Image (cartoon, rainbow, N blue to C red; front, side):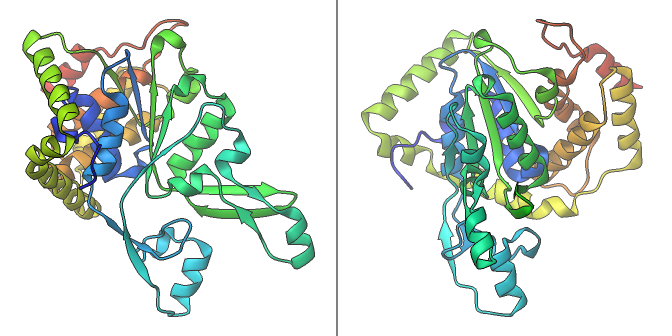
Length: 340
């Protein structure tokens, strides 16, 4: 266990934030999570702690994208060629890491660049990887994402949804896998994100400081203990860390086998119609989150309660709203639909 990282299971409260992060690790195709909240509410601590929580994963040795040797559908061109040619693929164990994207990042820095001159002279593609290449199979963390250029945010959300990054320059294109957990954090006091971009985040949570004195005291005690001896503090939570890490990995393996009844699909569709949610992205995200919730609970079938929990994370930021107003989820209407 690496030193210096605050244990994920030691974070007091913030259950919605922790659950949203876990669901995105179980299924990176959820489209990321936007965490809104005031300063000092463990947003960045939770992101770094989550990466440290997970066991090492198998990756192709010397591959700049750290491709999964068992997943041919999401390999880069070089690894796929080796696999098709039945070559021996050497592997290594690597830990998931947090790749941070600076607010000042340009599009080329994010997506990477193609050397057109080299392609013309030599007849082969030469790709200089960007941040999305580093982020493959990792967590891409963007602090103050509301201050990032809208076009760059759009590129990030495209890659997060598709799992692929494609760079095109002068008729030459190059694609590589970009399956990552996108985590954006922001303080609403510093400005909001345009609704069109907000809708493309899979899940969204709002975090606040603890309002119970007992909880706040526990936060203080744990932080002081961690600063006094981080190794000893991490050791106290090692068993819980290992158990949660194993649950997440089991859920990732179980996810493809999880099913959902048509009755629940109809419920989700009616819920979106009742709440007047625009488009179909909300429906799909609720279903994906519910599937991940069932897998995390060790079940191969989605229950109505999974839909309810998923709705709390996937719908509020998609509600129609007026300028300068927050979207509000009419939870009473949702509860009535479940009762019916």
